[in-house]
Image (cartoon, rainbow, N blue to C red):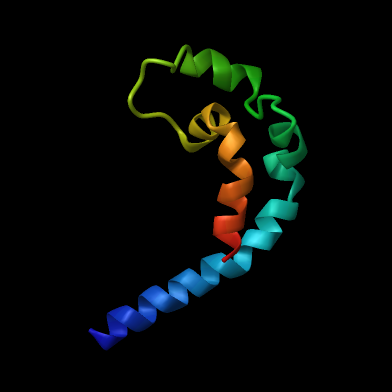
Length: 79
């Protein structure tokens, strides 16, 4: 069990170390997202269609729907 605990802690540390790089990346268009502009491309929006009544969506669509929680989410990821 110690090996599993060590692995989980190492995995968590590895992902935590990557957070700042991802937040700073232009790939995620964080400024547009924070300014309530869709970060999805038109082809993605067309392929997804209306997701308002769907139970499961891709991560970016879910974040688009809960944009007002983004600040708290970013702070949680940095811990």
